[in-house]
Image (cartoon, rainbow, N blue to C red; front, side):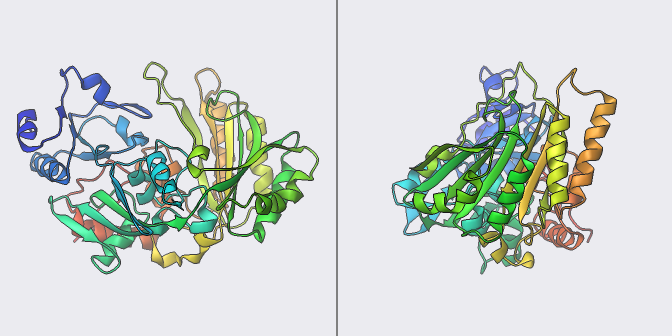
Length: 443
């Protein structure tokens, strides 16, 4: 493959090693990549042309929008950066979003129309990766996954063809896009059904002392709470610059009903050791996190742990999660409530696992040099495995590993087989393999 071919075929910038822009272009949000070449697509036609050349030269392809994926660090291949395809157009409650848009920009634009979508937690995360992986957002109980709000998409296939995909047009492919990852093509436009959202009520609670009784109370509260309420528990060390250290609960009410939020949280606030840090009505955009880009001179630490979807947050699961954090100063635990609209979607209606789960759980120790040795690393792996075995599948978007074995943990055998059959139809050469890869089924 020649850079000259790409520069002739596409209208957007093509950046290669040796170019003055190379070092800046190969940086992505969470690291520094080393692809063969980077194509900064300025149009759908640029995506098509770049794909055809990459396929002709038998190059793997990685699609970059927000740039939060760990796959950006895998060397080689052609990176097609679609961040310039970031248009946002609102037509009633139908929102057409370019595949390179970020959730912060989407929230900002939708606010001018009194609308909202349940998205990721971070403003700079791209719409593409989050949606294709499912998308457990801050209002998942109110409106389901980001993928549950999807009603259509424009997709460029490995052959360079442009498809309009919906429940009526290529329904199997549409099913695969709602949680099957970026295995099936480049989504250059997402069509979402938005919801009325003038603002959100948000509360932040601090926890002093033992988190166990608070988590039990939070679990019981969410068992029959209004679906407008989604709650997130986190316990993080001081080393994380993006969140205050210690144990906290963030609660989001899908709407400006601060009184309703306070009433729902009253049993928690009444507990010993729980205090209110803040409670207010805000634009949705203001509660999205602002996460700084990775410093290329400071490598990201490893992560020993994982995530899972729990049918029930029982006392034993709470004990194991709290104990995991207490035993490891440089570790993190996160829980997010599910149920509500998330559970309204039948299991067979999307590839996303565990629709009966009521909680998403994540725990991991940061593998900082000098803090973990082989024994403590193995101990953390065993402690996490004991938690994961209680769950039903994992959430790929929160899996920083590029180990291909994770795919079998993300989907049931039946779902993975169906995805593999669809993959065989639309990408038999596995061009789109820089992801949690679904290998095409054998013919």
